[in-house]
Image (cartoon, rainbow, N blue to C red):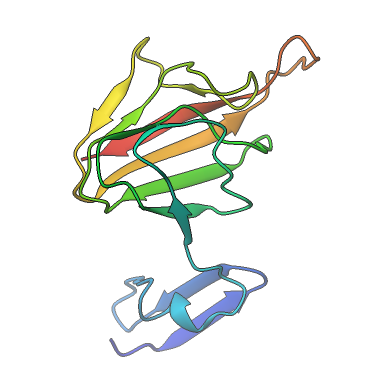
Length: 150
């Protein structure tokens, strides 16, 4: 791509404009050189239940480890508004458990009233952490499934 102008604003706002006014951003070619972008977290999970998973401060996690079907019931250390993309390349079926065995405040609400099951070939689930406007010890935050693919 022939770029006529490029503007990058700290920390991660970018706009590329070529001669016909199109904007094109490609993770592998453009963002690869920015040191402020963290690579995806490799999330080592096990077969069966994975509760209160430690995803650190990652915004994208690549799942590895399971050699059989596995489930995720929640993530530790949620912060209001935080989004996390889960990418499952394990080759195994992944279940997102609705309000499962993770601690209250770490659980996932699928918004379907039931669990969600995905194939193991590049399925993607995006969750975000939400805290009610009037938060207290009795009303903790929760991870909410925002979108899925696969």
